[in-house]
Amino acid sequence: MLKKNALIFSILIAMLLGVLAGTVINKNYTSTFADIKQRVAVNNSSLPQKEQQFLIKQIDKDEKQQKREASSPFSLLSDIFLRLIKMIIAPLVFSVLVVGVAKIGDFKTVGRMGIKTLVYFTCATLIALSIGLVIVNVFEPGKKIHIDMPEAGADNGVKPQAQTAKNFIAHIIPESVVDSMAHNEILPIVVFALFFGVAAASLGNKGKIIVEFIDAVSHAMFKVTNYVMKAAPIGVFGAVTAVVIQQGPGVLKSYAYLIACFYGGLLFFVFVVLMGICTLFKINFFKLFSFIKEPVLLAFSTASSEAAMPKTIERLEDFGLRNRTVSFVLPLGYSFNLDGSIMYMTFATLFIAQMYGIDISFADQIKMMLILLVTSKGMAGVPRASLVVIAGMLSMFHIPTEGLLLLLAVDQLLDMGRSATNVVGNAVASAVVDKWEK
Image (cartoon, rainbow, N blue to C red):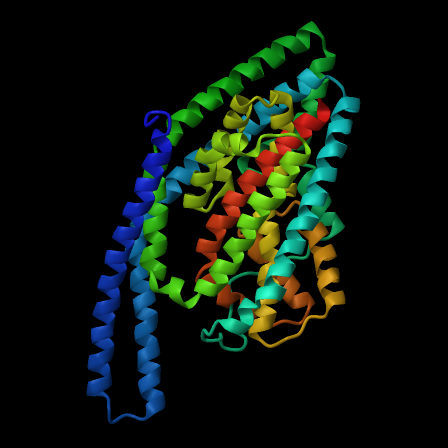
């Protein structure tokens, strides 16, 4: 039992050690700068209050900078691990998808499976967006937590990006598959692999040689994945330590209600909605979850869905899903079915509106949901994709865009839950389409 779950135990221990190490370092800096503030206040008590406040703000900035610098070596550990994972993704997605499509054999079957997959993704997206709206309207976290508002016009560091038809097509159809692989853009790789797989299957014996070679490549990439996963606890330790050093355990107290509302929504989506879908299709949800618990925990601890992708493919095939289904649905899911991230978009947008006392009508909320149904697709290749889409929504509905700063303090913590939910959502999608095809 221990040997079977060795990776899970290692990651859990790494998370615990990360929290402890981060807390110790954070408290050390916090106490040091608290003493500095006290001395400055005593030595400059004769100065006007505005000047005293200015000095305190400068000390706060220095404290944040010092904490960022202290977290940098730990972030490096996380970055190395995530880079190793990203190194695998493009060749793995290409190889497993080509082999899967070659086994399907023709565009008619691929098209049928594609339609079923997109129908499921659209339904799941609408449910996730609706849950985000319901939770934020019922529990109203923006009206019940009290944190300092950002200054008007403050730079949030995120540029809104409109998702036009031209941008969407450009993101789907690659000018160069090599360039897409270099930038780990999954959707263009999927499109090229679909054409390549069908073409290889149509060549008969000549194509068989190509497919067998690429099949061998996919097995080699799974082997590389197993090697890289041995470094997972180190990457997790670095990621968790870096977050706790910068944010400190105190941030949980200020944002506790917001975090509880969002995580409650994620748990409802996973253990009510997704479990209900599995029941409808006669899929054993808890058995499926037991197979993917490693990639789910990995996604949670690193706040990266991508980090879990290679392991998810492997575990879903162990669960009994057909290679051709997993290799087709899962890569598409990383662009079209990020359930946790999608739920966050409506939740976060209305939370910021509530913080500013802006009332968004029911009609506007439905309009927002329908816009996000389209704009959330194909955004996986954009860094901090959820925040980019949310920034666009804030601008569209005349909500101050600097309000995004209200979330940045806990975005990493919320991203951990989003990433884990994304993995479960795509695993369920693969199982549903596989069952549907049978």
